[in-house]
Length: 211
Image (cartoon, rainbow, N blue to C red; front, top):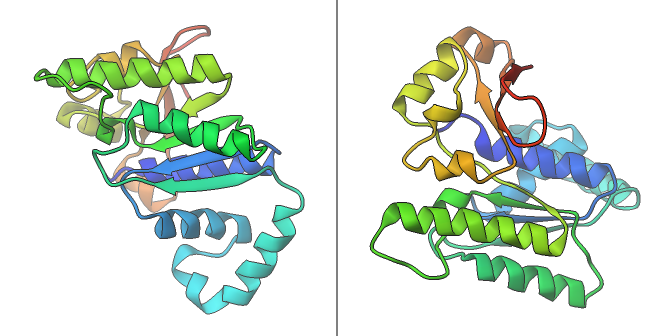
């Protein structure tokens, strides 16, 4: 919790757009306005808390970048209301307008709703992850999201690295994705603006690597 998941997702979306890919960003936690400003901050290379004092410079940079980058579309759902079928509808809506996405970013899957809710929280969580992965397989784009560690994982992320067994509540959140990367930082590293990315689980390449 509060470890930089949303910022990491926003940065990934921005970097993908700058590399020429078309990206759909679905936010379920932060408002679309905050998400857009975070991404714009990265495009303009102006600190988030300085955006209001540099509106003209930000707008100029965004206009310049829009001529060089892929397309970025943002959509906001209230927490707990977005279902996998809603993602499919959004993708189809934009495809009808001529936009085909390479990447869909969801902030984040843990606060989505299943298409068919049961009384079992683990079954609901698994359904969300399986159905969202199926969308990526069917549509041919990548999906990037985030999940929380448990309390022990939060401690491990400070003292070492959070691993596959440190995921909160449902191990399917590790088992179903093709690759899982944990964000790790001690207090000193945070002060220095540093972090370690640990490849906690990987389906098709070497895992257990820290950068």
